[in-house]
Length: 63
Image (cartoon, helix red, strand yellow):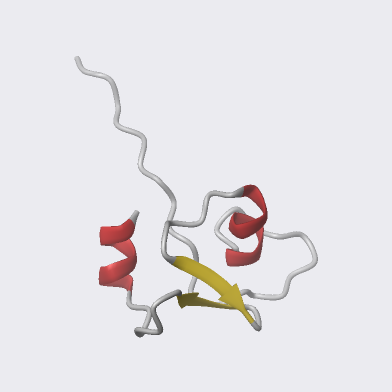
């Protein structure tokens, strides 16, 4: 038996604005420093630094 590989959680593309932030909230991940490289949050939405569109496929590749 091998060790289980821990999968990094991907951020949501938009904050759900709940008072208690979930672990995948982009705002919470930005605060904790666990947001993938090349991404930031503007107006509660996940955006890439180079201006390209955020897709789940690219997000998965970055994480």
